[in-house]
Length: 337
Image (cartoon, rainbow, N blue to C red; front, side):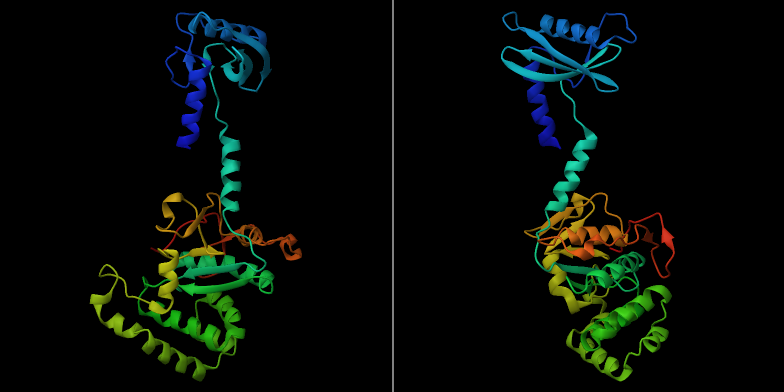
């Protein structure tokens, strides 16, 4: 934005040499005139410019058009053509204009184009299992997974610290081990868990083998020192948050700050430039991104090398509420960090 505005100021300086640049110019010591015609307003602007610039340079009118709230004046100074704008009452002259709507659209398109395309996009969603906003993102994720699971690599990962107590450590371990040992049942389990928040009921409902699960949990706990670090507060992040190191390498690689975090084809998706991680990791700013299945699907579909038929299928444009349950929500922001 700063670079674009600087270019505009340069253009203004060229158009009206000798006038103090301010962005809008007031015709002072003149009585306000209401409702000038396009030609009257243009003539007034040209006269003002010619009185203000060097004697050996002349401004001439080429065309004037009605742009709604202002008139656009197409003029020529020396051999160069410019566009300026004047209010319809003839009191304000703008040597240049910045179209906010067009710029917002261009910025959105540019941001989406930052994501590399592949034949089979890789989609990672980092969450804390009891983070309300992570649960909201998982409810966004699941319909898209069901649609694109045969065309893209899509997987749930865990943030490398805990903010919701021992129950979150236990649930992270459960979900990690179901993915590792009983992958075919994981997304059925997750669909149940985000609705009900009842892990025991969901284990039973989806037919998870508890013996296999418990053996894996013990092994993973030992391998990554999960409980050991929980019991040693000296290891906690900022002295407040127990560590959960199972996906620590990926958290560090992508600069994950909290739950949820989305990565598509090694590009971190954020809603604001300030959330982009430091370092060489690619970051794409999607300022209007909402956590609806349809918006998430559209984002992933832009990451394919070519169009696929699944992307033409419409999903819900409504975001789910944070936390457990399938209620809808007008809010689509927030994170645990």
